[in-house]
Length: 189
Image (cartoon, rainbow, N blue to C red; front, side, top):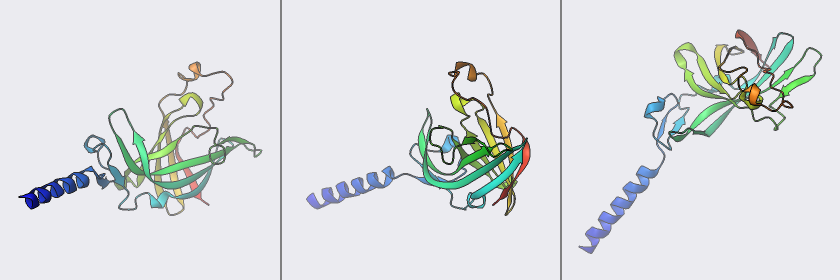
């Protein structure tokens, strides 16, 4: 009897430990079906083709994107927390005379985030969330499309350009330096 109880206890404990382990799911799992604590893994290497350094010019500014992959990035929402593999984009924007206008690659004072939230494999694209510049001015969505092994197309769709700037201290720069455009071609360096 004691052996059966020990066996039952061991079995229940093992099952509990296994069920507590985070569930690994494909990268594009629908948000509504992601369990709390899950891990969305880039099992098909959908993010790898975007990794690298890319440059483009727009309205006299040179924009350099530094795209890396982060595994197990924590995604927090009011409904659930989970982990995911994501592209992290840092950037430097320079004007025509070479003066740096904004640098999220080397300057940690900016709390600006630009990272992937999903991929669209049929369109050869990845969707990114952009936190916006100071006071979240310009927050929105960026879509990168892979054109070939050396080029990506950029589309930036801001959701809010000015309303939050009114609540921002006047000493902070609320200029949006990222190109607000569609079909801008970035070339891999």
